[in-house]
Length: 180
Image (cartoon, rainbow, N blue to C red; front, side):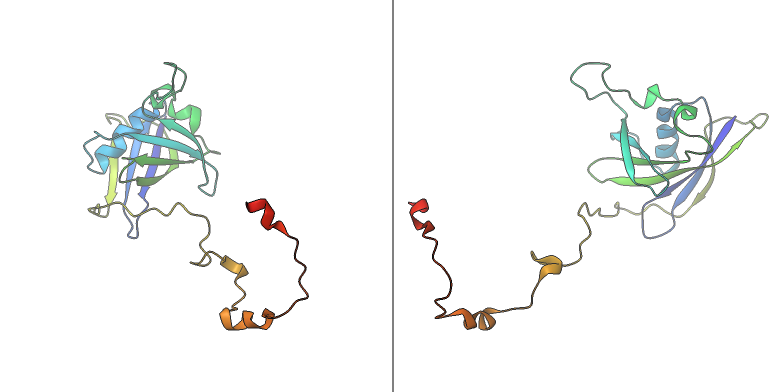
């Protein structure tokens, strides 16, 4: 069987490639097909990440074993496509070049019979031109406010705090001795 993927660059413009590859090929074969389809030279490190239906990143599958013990970490070459992706699990994230962080959303669009005389992997369709630089990633939680107080800002300033001057109703707990 042939897996047909749509590989979408995480960018402001629509930039994607449709790739056909055999189901028994590995994630490393898909990695090679992706960097070739997008015009990279393949000299950078990359990883796939499993994800849920809403693209939330889960487990990393690296190109190389980076563990302390050789063979400890399974790599892209250890995973046939059919072991990771099927009709129910259609999404995976691909990151190429961990300096530039080229990030791609990879979705299994179809599973079909092999075409007679076709060679795989094959880039079926290309749309959009690659930008010069990857989209800058923001690795922060929801940025509701740009200040240290967030949603708990009370909008009081120094003048508002004058109401406490001269008020002797606050108890002195005498903690100064703890700072000596």
